[in-house]
Amino acid sequence: MARLVSFAVALALTVMMASTAFAHFGMMIPDRNVLDQDHRQVELTLSFSHPFEGHGMDLVTPKAFGVFANGKTTSPLDSLKPIKVMDHAAFEAVYQAKRPGVYQFYMEPQAYWEPAEDTYIIHYTKTFVAAFGADEGWDTPIGLPTEIVPLTRPFGNYAGGVFQGQVLIKGKPAPGAEIEVEFYNKDGKYKAPSDYHVTQVVKADANGVFTFTCPVDGWWGFAALSEADYKIKDKSVELGAVLWVKMDGWKD
Image 1 (cartoon, one colour):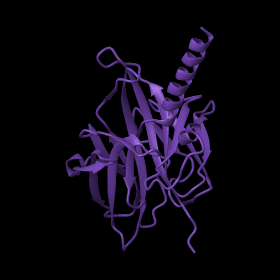
Image 2 (cartoon, helix red, strand yellow):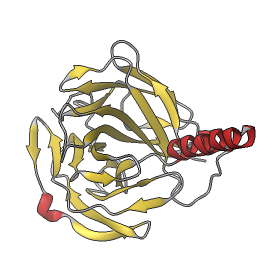
Image 3 (cartoon, one colour):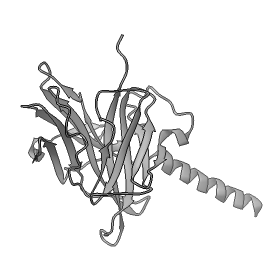
Image 4 (cartoon, helix red, strand yellow):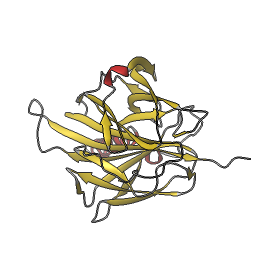
């Protein structure tokens, strides 16, 4: 009996470790997050995956794809073209900035059914691109059902620096929100010391504010998870406020 109990405990721990290591992330990665006169357009890749481990999942055509800049929102959903990311269905879009501004790109995916968790997943995903020297508006919420509003400017940051954000649900701070953090290990360069290191976890304070130090250069994803106040086909719905931020290394 003792051996059976020990095995059951070990199995439970394995499942818990696996769920920690393989966090889902909506992904929206631009090929650059700063535009200038020599680089006037950005190419964005939209996908759904486990970014550190490099395990992809299929992303169907998003419900919404938009750009918020200079107080206006456009919806170039028709510009999305199907591609493969991590051997799974994904999309790309090319966007040309015509005037200075801080461009907030966002995606609302179709609900994703996750049988292992017996729940649907909807990750409202954002990233920022600054164009032609503009430096205002990056801390403006865009009115998603849940979103992370940066408190640290989300571009022009060095690796090793601190990133702060505020989690909002229906426009209000989410006290004590749990935020999962993963590095986009695109080339498989890094190996995690343990499964716990794959997905970092931080808690927001009473005002929904969290702080995280990004140790290496590259793209970092922050996913604040909450449960929706509605169901789909009598199943619970996990909402994610996802934000992707690039940290840069020093140049020689």
